[in-house]
Image 1 (spheres, rainbow, N blue to C red):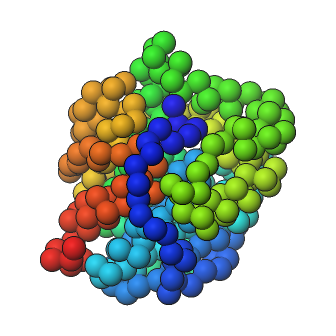
Image 2 (spheres, rainbow, N blue to C red):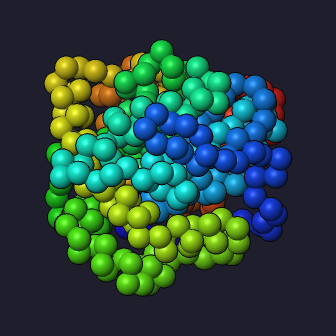
Image 3 (cartoon, rainbow, N blue to C red):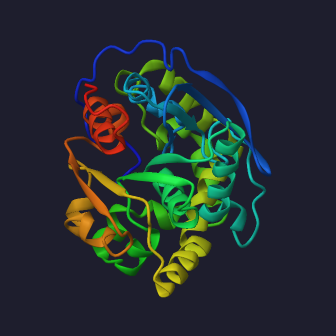
Length: 307
């Protein structure tokens, strides 16, 4: 289950997050997205998962900058300080296709016509859609703790429904908003010692904004409806991810336990795919940042000698 941590390893002392980065609101088509960016060299877009913000990358982004990358961390559309799409009955404004277009527009606003993208959890679904719909723009893509939504839904069994029940709870109209907003701390269990104090405070502030909660839930509602239809249509047409794909998964989470080797599934969706597990709980950018940064650097290859 992906609502908490499930891993309590020490990750070291946290200093001020994103030192040397610039932050602000970035035009992203119909929305403005909040982001922080820094470094020089090939551009890499980092996309967080649920229920995080772009601050989740604070232990990884500086390492990538040191290894020769320009790093951009964006709050997903609706999440954190990014503008919130207006919900509709068909959930299209929160679809990964629409969101990917907004993320692409934000990167273009920053002057990045071509870039690599790394996504974790829900952010991986936006990264997947970016790579699938914009192969001439995305140079490489890394997906962390992710399978296509359609692969999950087409394989539903008792184990999945029990472990990932929140997908279907979040799909209910209005009820999850009332439950979560009544006591966000009881619903989401954060630990500043694991997350880092500033990351924790940003995350906690976001969860106290009902508009953020609504947008996060709409993300899941879109996943079960419009995103599923889009992926099913892609599969019927034989569309595949063209840029090189790296798949990483947390060995202390349940993706491998549910499905076996995730690479077997991803090889049906990509022309060139590789990957491996990382010894971590689900939020690997916070719990295993050194291992994750090393794996990403090897894959992205700005400076192969960087440690």
